[in-house]
Image (cartoon, rainbow, N blue to C red; front, side):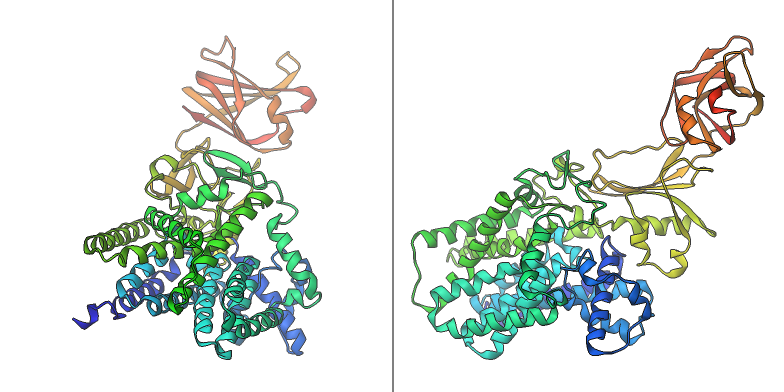
Length: 631
């Protein structure tokens, strides 16, 4: 059949259609991730700047936003996401926040899909082998760690999208040497750098080509000039001082881009240990990239690197255009990869959130793997070619199955070689994708009224913007501190936590988000079932310089006591307890604070009365609500 011949483009089309359909179906599954609120704020600040320059009106509430020079994320450009902001403007910025989140996810995905199409066209134009092109597409799309980020990570994955778009345009420019492709190359390079300053690594391609390809020097000069021009046009952060913008941006990303209140305080979980984000070991990046990249990728990439280095050692630059084109693609990839890794080891930049800031290194790694595929598919050995195809099919089946099973938490992916040993030893859901799911569960659990939740590292305020206004207004985030009444729920995120189990005194776990044996987030509900009824009598002076209360109840095993609505919380550590079984002989109770409101007894106390004593300098024990909990 003609469609199955090597030169056909049938299989890549089928894969691209499937990818597009899948993306459109699951686009709404992720909810609002951790940084999207601030990215939307950055988009609105950018819109305000544009409208001021053009003398056009904008919402007055935008004047309350910080100036760009004071904005934390000022070096994250918004050019690639401008169409979503334009949609908001067409609707007078009255669009429901959940709709804005959906549109941002959709637009991010469509840009990645466009990049995937151009990537497939580029590979197919080079090799005229639909099986190689289809395999390359599978390697690109089925990287589980990156899969979910396609939708909600509108910086690191958006950079990858525009890197691939640039490579397609640049490849066309070097072959056709036309002004049109020079302009498209320049524009895509500018968008990449605007999205993340690390897009500057793409300059290695025009630099290498300029040195080794004389006939391309004129279009390369056009590309350089116009990319610089486009970048300054689309990057408001450069408008005040173009000469210092790029150096300041580089310093910002290499040092610490967090706000002052969180700098050097956040910790990372790496190989079972916690590190401050500016103190991670030098091998942090290579280890993370190795364990979160599929094994098939790694093997093919290793083969590709060996082949590229072999070509370099032979110092071979063939005169044939096809071979030269190959060399001018893979050699810059090797240079980019090596230079970035060397810079990371020497400069030791601040890391947080896994290795997402360096996800762009997956692009050269992908092309290393393609170089390996070219060798295997072009070996002329039918058995080797068939075996390679089978391995790619198994890779696709296994990773597709894993993505379906883990969805929408693809971010926790660790490859099969380390998964069983490394689970729970690395950061998990740092994008807080699990928070919307837990909030939806609470919304269904509590049929009406406000939902009060102790929020421990889940940051519900970030997730709210991806929900309807009605649901947003129901949630009340309570601090983890002494409270007047027990807070009904706790939402706990395991992102950088060691271990896989968490307990809270007085609370029972009732819902967990779990994948691959790793808990990602968990919901706890206050347990009223174990509370013991009692009567209270005051003791103003039991004869030992103390004041307190006696709690009387049916004989029970008591394991815990909790205090609420107290006049002064600083007194809690000074409280002493004793108990009696017969009402006559009293024994001290060894106990320690195990939460902001309660004490846990060292062992279950068989008692019918418990005395609570407080030194007189604290006055009377003024706590309106006391709970006794049976063991």
